[in-house]
Every structure is written in structure tokens, then in C-alpha cells.
Amino acid sequence: MFGLKKILFGETTPEHLPDEVRSALAQWREMPSPDLHGPHFHTRYIAVDIATSGSNPDTDRVLGIAAASVYRNMISSDDAIFLDLSTLDDEAEIARSLAAFLSFIGKAPLVTYHEPFVGMFLQRLLKSKLGVTLPQQWVDLAWLLPSMFEEKSHGVMPLDFWVGALALDSTDERRDAMVNTLLLARIFQMLSIRAIAKGIDNAFKLLDESRASSFLRRTH
Image (cartoon, rainbow, N blue to C red; front, side, top):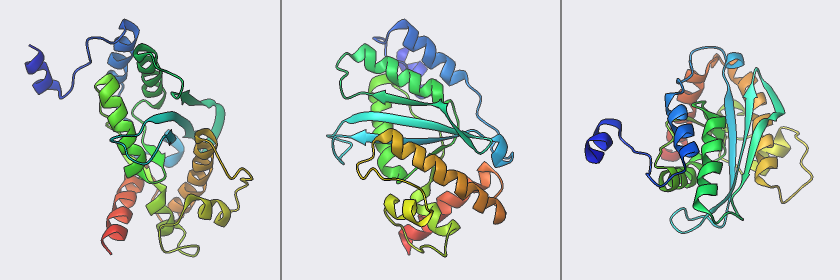
């Protein structure tokens, strides 16, 4: 039965998880996918950043996860979450924290900087601890910003370049994951306005443009 369930549904919830985590995962799996063809104003995007112990997802740990909602082009401190995993050793507590993260993001499109790095760490962590794979599509600002703001840069630049180029205040040179996430959310606000001016007026088009920008800049 276990093997058949895995074939039919692609992944299974580990049996050792607490009941409340299993219930939360079941509810998350049942969440509907958002309509990506409506205007940006009606789409809930989630900016995400992580803190890690190093740069290798095979050997290094995720120490923290921060996420903030951008909805109706607004950011609210009440619609954000930060998970400090650096002090958690209990597997049940880690599972509860990650389940809370999934409940917060739902199935919304995710926004980050250098998705291959952030996405790989998150996918490995969620798969190993909860047995789930994120179905989300990603807006990768690292590749998309040069396409939207050609007058500022034609190539991929460090995040600090865009913080300065877009005149965003950031006096803390050692930003934590939550501060970075709020910066990403503010940058996304500006990017979505520029995208609308270019005719990229919904999430479906923006995600397509993000994929195209990443492919073109990686191959040229």
C-alpha cells in the first residue's frame, strides 16, 4: 500500500511526524493553486530568503527562513513569518516550524534572489523533514531585474547593487534573513510596477519572463 500511494501521489508524509503536523500538511496539500492570470494587484506573492551555515546544500544547514507577503502591492509586518531553526534540535519542533512556513506561503508564487540557491536549500530541507516538494513557481529577481531596469544594469549584479540603484535605505551591512526579505518585497513592489508598464501585467507573464530572462542570461 505504501508503494502504491507513492506511485499515485508522488510523495508521502513520514509516519513519525506529530499528528498536528500531518494535519497541517494535509490542509496545505488541499490548498488551491492561485489564479496566475489576474492582475498583479490581485495576486499574493511571497518574498523568501534564508540564512544558512554555508553555500553547499548537501552539507550545510538552513539556520533561518523568512517570508513576507506582497498583496495588493502592499507589505505588512503582520503578514510575515520568521523561523529560527538554528537552535532547534528536536525533530518534532523543526517539523512544526516548517509546517507553519508551508501554511503561511500556501501555493503562492515565490520571490527571491538567486532561486537555485534558495530553492535547493528549501527543497532539500522540506523533503527530508516533511516529505514534501514545493510546487511553487519562482520569480528570480537576480535575473529579472536587469530585464526590467535595463538603464541600471544589463547583467546579474549583487543584491546590494540593486538596493543602491533603486534608492532603498539599508544601513545594516550585515542584514539578517528577515531584513533581506523585506528588501526583496520592496524591490518586487517596484519591479511589478515596471513590469506592468512593459505589458507584463499578471503573474503568469511575470513568471514566464523570469524563466526566459534566466535562460537567456545563462546561455549568452
